[in-house]
Amino acid sequence: MRIDVVSIFPEYLSALDISLIGRAREDGLLDVRVHDLREHTHDRHRTVDDTPYGGGAGMVMKPEPWAEALDAVADDSPVERPTLLVPTPSGTVFSQPLARELAGYEHLVFACGRYEGIDERVFQWAAERFDVRLVSLGDYVLNGGEVAVLAMVEAVGRLIPGVIGNPESLVEESHEGGLLEYPVYTKPSSWRGHEVPPVLLSGDHGKIAQWRRAQQVERTRLRRPDLLPEGPLA
Image (cartoon, rainbow, N blue to C red):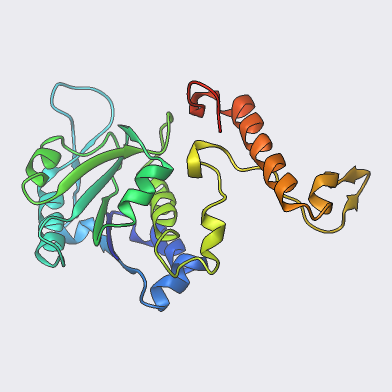
């Protein structure tokens, strides 16, 4: 998979050089390229923002640097229409099903906005060359898109075959199957007065599976009831 990220703070994305994502890059499973938006400005101050039409606080990112940066990425894309993902609080919520969908794409491009956001016309123009999707990590506001991109790249990248050593671990996770993950334990079986649930020590895999399923349902009911489907769970 090819991933391009455009930002005014490319050094912010250096975390993509470490851990499993960094190893996947070294192994050639992920081709991640980070671009400095300011390289597509043409004034001595390398200006990427200006005051908003209609007034208001803050600054808005100018359209032309973005158009030039995205044109350069699109011209070098391995596919006819790459997918452009724009982190923004006004986007649709990023989710595990979306991460799994994106993991099947050949080329993803991330645009990291700052200040009050990117001129809206950029998205209208970009639709001519990209499949544009505005996405949000949740109902809160960050200073820029870089933190969101780090989260999204990791969520998507770990689903690429070969990135996770044991692919079975991807099956029994929170949000896979629509429920939160069951609680997990390791040695010792007794720790500071707290015991591992006896069923996990029983060796009865059928009972363990039943217990884990019940824990998933109960944990989801308590923490994220909005995830539970209507009607009984199998």
